[in-house]
Amino acid sequence: MQWTEKYRPKFYGEVRGQNLAVEKIREFAKHKGGLKKAILLYGPPGTGKTTLAYVAANEINAEIFELNASDLRNKDKLNEILKPAIEQKSLTKSNKIILIDEVDGISAVDRGGLNQLISLIDSTKYPIIITANDIWNKKFSSLRKKCELIQLKEIDYKTIKDTLILILRKEKNFVENDILTNISVKAKGDLRAAINDLQIIAGMEGSEGILDERNKETDIFSALRLIFKGKPTNDTLKIFDSVNMNTDEIILWIEENIPNEYEGEALAKAYDLLSKVDIFKGRIYKQQYWRFLLYERIFLSYGISSSKKEVKNLGFTSYKKPDRILKIWLNNQRTAKKKTIAKKYAQYVHVGEKRALKEFPLIKSIIISNPLIQKELKLTEEEINYLSN
Image (cartoon, rainbow, N blue to C red; front, side, top):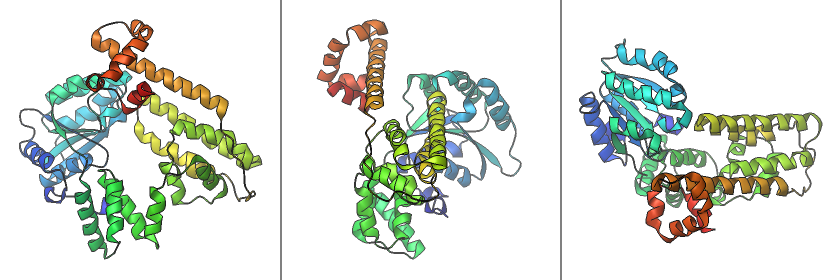
């Protein structure tokens, strides 16, 4: 059993590093809503948003009815699923809490479902808890007004380390103090990631060396050798986690080099799995359902590796860089960033997007000159890096 599930908090007192959020949601659940019928928990992954919703339900003996962004595709589906849930009493518990998980996965074309969700918030007699990583997109402005906003912050590494020590005591296991510190710092506030790392390292000999290796950045050539020449294992799934490269670029590298390693049935199977990666990538962009990233990575790592029945070429292979296709893709990425920055600027100063693109060299120098402007335009880190290059 995964330790993240085995040691998931069940009561408020077990939630670590989120005292303010705990107090607010305790009051919200206790009074079945209060002034606002919905509460919106937002913050980075692994900080306990979904867990806190389940804790709140457990504390007041409430049934929890969970939906996610894929259930909010349109008004009709939302009516079909959510409306009965907010009208009917629980058959087994004294109370009910409605959980809408990862609402920021709703895309721009899903506003019908979002508007209906806002309408149902007004009519519900049960408290609604909504979770999101980032809720500051303009399309959520109406939803923010309907909810009490509660931010969950990245968890301090000392709190993460204390939690890991507690888990090890319960497991009657031991990991060196320095390694626990490294895990806690490396997690960057993500408690779930830290617990997953701890479980892997606690179950292996020579764990210190393993952690050192996990902290190193893997180059794409080493990753390709492990995929093409190694046997598929659970570690294969994590190969690209330490590669400092965009997934789309990794796809191009694999596509270019599959024929250098595979032939016949293995070659056909590998390309078939790569096509499935492309299908899921399209679904992610179209539906904004980011959970599909999991399947994208599975096909790209374990799937490609398992295409071969056995390793025939154990010698050195010189992998080729996908220069032509990569240049096209990188240029498209740069053009896309330019367009998104121009769009944000145009909306902020109330001018047309075409004009903003035409005057982009001047706009670029203005934005670079003042970090406050970058903050006002809500530029992403990638967009800021694009302007700086």
